[in-house]
Image (tube, rainbow, N blue to C red):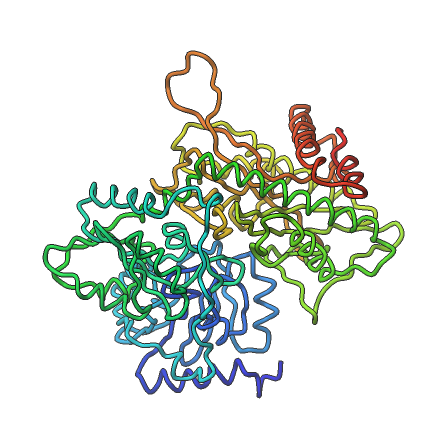
Length: 606
């Protein structure tokens, strides 16, 4: 990157001119939008536009003298490469939930100075923590400025894709019934109104889907629910006349997207508004009428949608089988073509996505395919591109590991799976890492625990085999997964996060299990399945608690050629053999020819 003409340097320079004009000593640019989404429409990708760092999570801070991106270990190599020559520093943080940028601002902005951040994209809970730290440092906080608007003339418009219904049979509960459940919680909390901004909650609540965010079937909207009706604030033209009538019949009226703040401002005395402080922005919270009483609690829909009902689980199992069949077809082609055709990380993306597209109920990918060979696999969120990608090949006597993390959106569920495959002759060190990760996956998959156990408390089960060898990984072990919705959802999180009461594991929750080992510059290993929390059969006479265990939903062989057998106990081998028998029995009726042959070979017991 030419440091004199770099577009990033020029943008930062223009921003500093605006900072000086506004008498602001630092600008905070979070990876966020007015809905606090993980994945953002282009209109709100200001951090990426300003810095050049394309990771899905990260925070940019710009002062007159320093610019820094704060990113966790999933993105360190990627961020270092993308920030090179930009003049922007990389600050390495432990986790995506770190507040290191807050402490950094408190240290680098002198007392009497001002920090600015757009309050329309800053979460209320994050704002409270930021304001507290800056107050202690004698630094003012301004949240009424959108400084990006002054320097981003080509800023993309808001998405205008149409919205459609999620229909029965896959939509197993009517929107009226879901709204009624939410109103029961509102009544219990004494709320007359409830405001929802999180787009996956809204999509789930009123059985609609969209395409405003890549890979997530959601749309930009806000929802204000009262005791008898609801108002959906959404862009003009996104809802057809026919769908408008359907929603109206169910008590859901439409209003312009930009009118949400005014509706909140109109609330006054006698109105009790329920909001989730972790799922609403500061700007929208500040819009609420001063006379209205505000009740802070988790969105009822966040808890409700995390617990899939029996009918939804049946559709998820069907989606998993279709997804597994696609994987069989892809891997059969891959192993036959390896060494005969030129295969790259991009080829893998193309062929695997095409195999999924042929399956019943498939709508789209749930995230970009991550295909990382050797050193590229050591970057957890690596994405191959035309300008930089690896060829899948190995010289005679040599070898490597190919990590493929992928998933699909089906009308009846969302999938997410990671597998690692040997290319050529793999080393003893590679086999050791692979087997240790497998032991972590098995340990958590086989866990039994009391219902209501806080999900972060399960994290160490998957890490223990790695910790015993002095190894750890920087990302979480597991995340919730939506029902034809976001591939990442809460409230559960199997991670090092500080637990709260809403992270309790409950029947019906679908969660990933994905420990890993990453050797920068060499290889990466991650083995990921999705699991369903189900009631466990406990020994007769146990009266202490209701126990849960995991049913593994993902159906795809785990490669046994990379296993160091001496590191596995007999009970671990027995679990793996049972799993492979289930995979074979479930998928064999759905595939044929080379795919069936591959399935039978890769599910042979060890």
